[in-house]
Length: 70
Image (cartoon, rainbow, N blue to C red; front, top):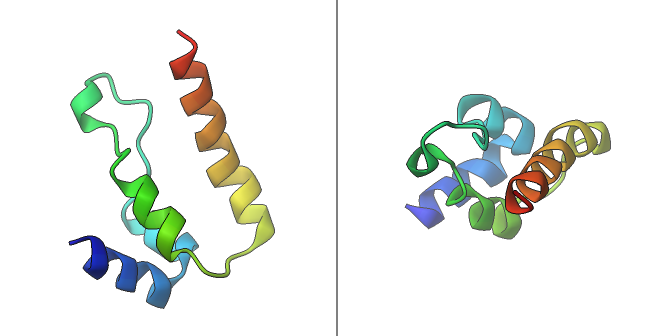
């Protein structure tokens, strides 16, 4: 599954991939948080617009940081 999603991420690009399978860090139930997707993003992300990273990935990282400090 990791390789399959990684291939899709490389082929589609991070912006299109995350529009289909968005990161969910604000879920009420901790079992519905998509942290399993982070290693795939880290290993297989190539390219993408800088503004996309700033608005999407950076905001997600800030959300995770805030949750970890609670």
